[in-house]
Amino acid sequence: MRLTRRRLAGAISWAVVPARGQGIGPSPALGRLAEARGLLFGFAIRAGRLLSDADYAAFVVRQADILVPENACKWESLHPQPDRYDFGRLDQVADFAAGHGLRLRGHNFCWHRALPDWVERITGPAAVRAVLEAHIATVAGRYAGRMHSWDVVNEPIQPTDGLPGGLRDTFWYRSLGPGYIDLAFAAARRADPKALLCINDYGLENDDGGGPARREAMLSLLRGMLARGVPVGGVGLQSHLRAGGADRFGPGLARFIGELAGLGLRVLITELDVDDSRLDGSDDEIDREVAGVYRRYLDLVLGTGAIEAVTSWGVWDNRHYTGATPPDGPPARRALVFGPEGEIKPASRAVAAALAAAPPAVHLQAGSVTTGASPR
Ligand code: G3I
Image (spheres, rainbow, N blue to C red):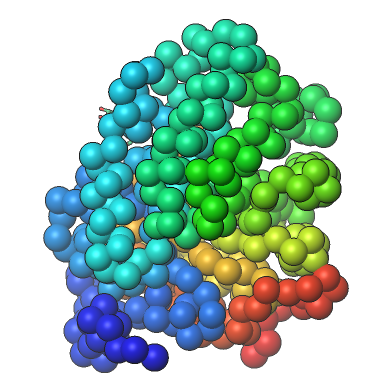
């Protein structure tokens, strides 16, 4: 393995330099652990902080293999006016990633949120299609060859909306029908012949509640897309988990991942975090519960051997509403893998242990996915 500058830095950090903050033991360079198992580990990053906070940036380089801008690729950031794109920050993030040998995920082209008002004021399928295809051609084309993957369509499934196939009632669906999904993927593939094109969604992790219906709708959507020759290559499981109460994920999730792999699709854990807003107790008690969820979840999904990448939805703990935090309650406080200044905490060690224990990641054929816990 070529000892690049980043890997050398990573090795040193692993061997000698304790992590920022607590400095307890060597910093677990999670990206290095992941690489050793044929995996990628990384973070959703805040572009502004990455480009202005040298400590944050150095930490990201040390720990990650892959980045995804949390918001910088969304319409409201990139395309705020009909005739204006603002590529400044994303160009810098792309240069940063390339300069440090980090892969880059794009998120996203079609979503029901983060749309500027001007988009939803467009009427008529022809006009909406033209704007969508032009946006994707412009953005995906600008970064063609530099992207590991794109979340082309985000959160298309919502069975409770009552639409055929369990699709979500969104501006894109209302304007273009279910065909908006195929249109978006075709436009993305025309603009970037190489990037892995993904559908990304939440709730697919859950064996209970709405999880089975979401999985059934997703599998039906994907089978139809593949039958039509739509260039979907991957599925992102957002994985916004919660601590407190029984785990909602279980063997059904491993089977679902196996079904996705059996369709020849690559599977990524794309927005991993563990909402702690339901927990009381000291930081230590909260950290232990959160770490337990990280470990059990990653043991389960990595144990299938079919996961390609794990990205945590944030770098350092901060008070925020995760995808699993009840909006009418308090924010999550310690939901991420590292502390507020990158301190190693139990979740850091739990993720490191799960990565170290994971079987080598392989792109599996049908039926060969293990559905049990990861081997000890
Ligand atoms: O940057 C502006 C700031 O200038 C302004 O003062 C402030 C108040 O209006 O807003 C700031 O932008 C906010 C942005 O986060 C950055 O903080 C947006 O309003 C806010 O809507 C945006 O929220 C993001 C949300 O997606 C909607 O795009 C969250 O950070 C982000 O974590 C969340 O991520 C989503 C994934 O994209 C999809 N899966 C679920 C996940 C969690 O909700």
